[in-house]
Length: 296
Ligand code: NAD
Image (tube, helix red, strand yellow):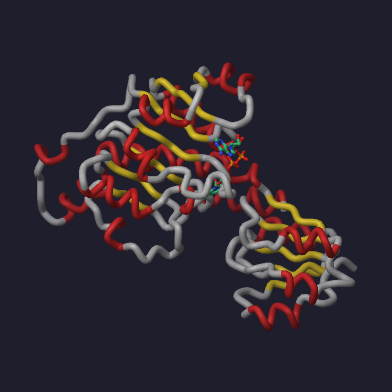
């Protein structure tokens, strides 16, 4: 019998599928690292989301039985992929499952910053009604710059096009086919994208070449009214530089779902009136979690 160890909370639908096929599924949530090392031996498959750290020690403890690690979600930041490769353990994730949920949140953050929805909500709930204070900026006809026209970037571009926005993008890979289908234009450089966009949205993976891809120099290239949205990975932006740009009026606003450190410690950035933030909930929809669990 195939034995599956589930260490993070995963939608039951996928687990029931496994149980129905005769797999043994053991759900043991929130195991401390040493306990996970003691438990993993004897299991064929390890299912995790982002919380459990699948370190070399964990993988070595599973040696002999462990054949597959599935990260239910996107990104393999919490799995030591190199160690798994050396030990002959396959690693998979389910990036397709969360595309629309992240894209929809991205659009939500863009609208929330442009129309200051959270601040207006707090005002009305506090008994206020200051219409004049909430003069927003419209998005129809404005330019959205997408950094990374991959799965999520494409979906964001599609929705933005339907909202009447002009969409430009920058990617290191040729995305001619996708961009023609969506109706968005490539730009020759990141610098050009930053200078031309009213809203910039980031959809690249975190890698050595994307770490702090948006720093002081890049923020200085943006329009002072521009909005920056990040639902990719926190460390793609230099948060200190972002804080300075927002505080000094070098940038219009920011919508952030991801942070360099999570939960974030830099409360000064989060508490700025022109910043809207969410606790890394890009993939947190019923539909996305169900789909990720079934795919896994
Ligand atoms: P993807 O691999 O489909 O697309 C990434 C795109 O970025 C590719 O087209 C790639 O060519 C491009 N790219 C890579 N390096 C680049 C660079 N230096 N400059 C320009 N373009 C570059 O990835 P995806 O599935 O669309 O995910 C995008 C991001 O969203 C990832 O960082 C992922 O971790 C993140 N994500 C966040 C959440 C969340 O909860 N907020 C959920 C899922 C995914």
